[in-house]
Image 1 (cartoon, protein in one colour):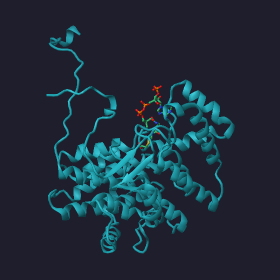
Image 2 (cartoon, helix red, strand yellow; image 1 turned 90 degrees about the horizontal axis):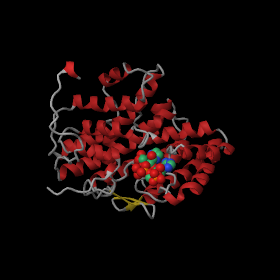
Image 3 (tube, rainbow, N blue to C red; image 1 turned 135 degrees about the vertical axis):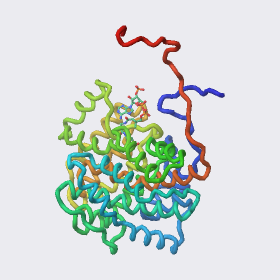
Image 4 (cartoon, rainbow, N blue to C red; image 1 turned 60 degrees about the horizontal axis):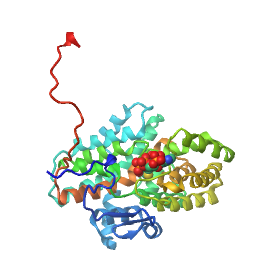
Length: 378
Ligand code: CMC
């Protein structure tokens, strides 16, 4: 067997062949199925982009309407799922609640039929439709309220914000939220997508695929960074404190949350769009002092770390957008998951099309031929 050089974190090692998305980390370009995200952010919707990623091409008008219709009418969650969620501790993290709920969905649809396109489509629709409902339901239930039923007259993003806040969202906020979902929906072979593909390769059900990916997304080096960015900006508290804060982190060799990327060596194009969206929200709903802190932070970090190619990533400005919409900090990563589920499902489908189970090797660096020592001699 050919043994490759060991690369921690599998840096630079292709784990799959994929036509879903592409990143040029030197030029700061991200494409979904060949279309630049700037164009999709301006002209598409989340559901249309999800369709593009999963089925490979932009839908016709009829195809899009049919998909939107199916998603709209599968938004409700079963009362057993809701009752299960009621028993979750309210102090628990919403990502854990989401992971458990996504896995629990599989209990209701355990008849796996991976070769049947209708099964694939039903699973895609059900997961994209119900994950926002589960996130909103947990949020209301942990406050002691009953979850709000989805509203069929509202679009995907407007409906989520409605279920979360129990009132119809401002149209600009709903539009910006939808763009945020487009920006987070897919990003090549990141950790959670890799996790999804490994799970998919065992031919388990899509609910297990999504649950494993949600678990992976939650960590602070991946999707969980967006929460930590806001906590960091709050801790910094003022523009003057930025420089000493950054210098202290660097001296302790700690990571600055929301900066750096395995692939991008320039500013993440998603961060640039999110910054513009944040500005649109501040123009309409009032300025946020944390935005000034964030801008100063970008300047100071560029001064210190641009030589290493460390710039803001997607998580740096997304939190400021969600914060301005009044969304609690610990829901930022579940919102990332609401978007990314479509990317994971696109990879699930692609993995199934040419499946071979993931079974990498390892470099054993332990001992050999050690005799068993009886317990009284240890
Ligand atoms: N702050 C300070 N230094 C950094 C940072 C950072 N955020 N990121 C990388 N570096 C330095 C690192 O110290 C190392 O320096 P040296 O070569 O002198 O030891 C060099 O850059 C390479 O870092 P690395 O940790 O080997 O890079 P990686 O590709 O393994 O990690 C990363 C990528 C995203 C995990 C890392 O940049 C990081 O931890 N960033 C902070 C957490 C974060 O914002 N995560 C969100 C990532 S984007 C969205 C997502 O994936 O969900």
